[in-house]
Amino acid sequence: MDSEIVTHNGGCHCQKVRWQVHAPTRIVAWDCNCSDCSMRRNTHFIVPSERFTLSEDSEQFLTTYTFGTHTAKHTFCKVCGITSFYHPRSNPDGVAITYTCVDPGTLTHVEIKQIDGKNWERSVNLSGISSCSKV
Image (tube, rainbow, N blue to C red; front, top):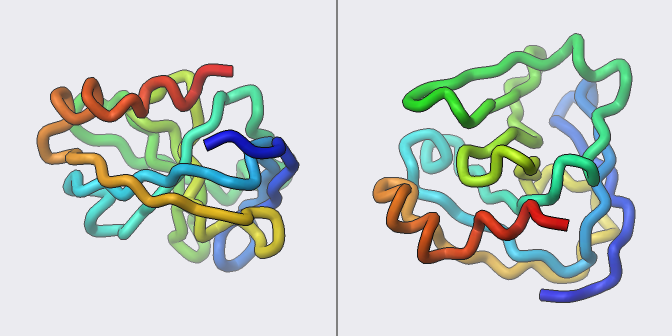
């Protein structure tokens, strides 16, 4: 889904965690049914790591949860508990942005695709999600 690359601002509910991401105005967001994403209802889009900048003061408010292979780094705000971004197992060279945590006004279209996180290896290979973190 090609569109103009713009700067999106976003963060958590309490605004202690803030970031910028350079991404298209039209995105594909992934709705995953793995044990973690399905409980959090995290629907996210993925960008290359170099297109993501965490605001300097935000680091002190973050904590990280890992499980399974410990490849994914599920970051969330220590104050409000919101995961506004994380580093996904599918794209260790990328950042997954919770699309509902993007400030209003810069996303013009969100296409939601399903990914079968319960059958992760097969689904990741079939979905093409790994290419989302390539420049």
